[in-house]
View (cartoon, rainbow, N blue to C red):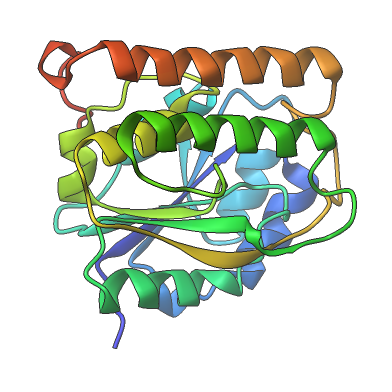
Length: 243
């Protein structure tokens, strides 16, 4: 039986059209807490999420990493692990149960949903995203000898491991910082195949424009370099797990 000491954090920026349907598809029995972090939306994202039964946390300073940190700060005592996923319905909520089962059965520290190992709807990953995934994971494998196939947004991490990683990136580098530091610390990591779909509503904040994709790619590569050059003991204070 899967533990109910798990929490789900969904960063959301202007996702009013998608967030309600996403929350209706979440397997509620899996989570003791479902948090939507409103990351400075100018639409009704917060209202729709609240009406759909989620706990809404406001983080007006935009940035994916900042939104994740705000969600982490709102976790209830006793939470043992956290799942992160996107708000735009690209991630398939049906994969959440499989992700949690693998995490629990294999006693993992970090489980990552791999779109590369799974099935991507045509057009859901741009050629630039695929190349960026390949290059970044190749760098991680070269530096820390740990193999990944993807930097996918759906992932599950134990709270103890999250404390150890001391994640600090405020935006696009959050996921790769998590993977690079997890590789450096030799945490128990696995990837599972997941489904990935084209965005149904709105426009991607990263891959929706060439400029956004290039900025995100540069930040991701810089994050790998920073993790390689720095020592964990010199990082900032640990990410707070509760307010």
